[in-house]
Amino acid sequence: MLISFCHPRPTQVELDKHYGVGETSEVSQNILSNFYPKASSRGRRAFFNAVKLLPYIWGKRVMDLGCGGGFVVGSMKTVGAREAVGIDINPSSVGYASAKYPKCKFYCGEFGDFSNRKLGRFDFIYSSEVIEHVVDVEAYMKFLVDMTEPLAKVFITTPDIASNQVPKNVTSWDVFSPPLHIQFFTQATLTQLFERYGFKVIKRTTDRGGAGLKMLFIKSRS
Picture 1 (cartoon, rainbow, N blue to C red):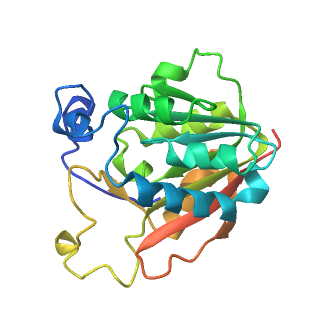
Picture 2: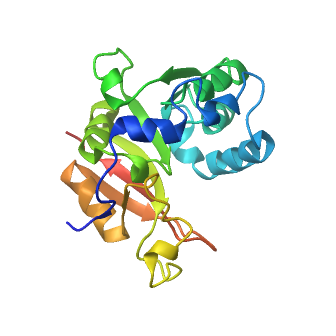
Picture 3: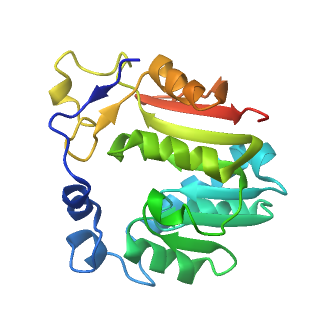
């Protein structure tokens, strides 16, 4: 399986500085318990996304992995999720989400922080623009396996390095942005990765006007 990735890869500590982990970071200072940048537009977009995914959300136990300010989590609860949970590494984002969406549950931490927590398993996991940031993709996939019920659905979005909108000189692509984006996928390589962990593609949603992958997977019965 061929995946394009950043070399040398930054450490998690280095990435944490970019992602605003720590209250002294610039990112965290821009987020307050009652303020999140572009909250209105983020909320509208999250609601429309939740409506599109309604068949996988209604009456289900759902999670947004990399939830940011909790907009998708709140929207999934609004459209009928039985229980909606969000996980993010930024404490300020989790603080905002917890204050804005009190009917949902939010946790701050990395994948390994949740291996022994009694969070239970989920019927649907949403993870948008996250996997390209992850240093340890194997840990990300194992987390998805551990946290999902048999036949659970997983919806992933990530940049598509095979898109015809990607310039020949990939370093000039505005989405490239190392070291924030550690690796890039194509439809084929993302499919192969998920199949290794027992997930099959249900469908790919067209990313109109963008160079992105939007793919829905289903976990095997076992």
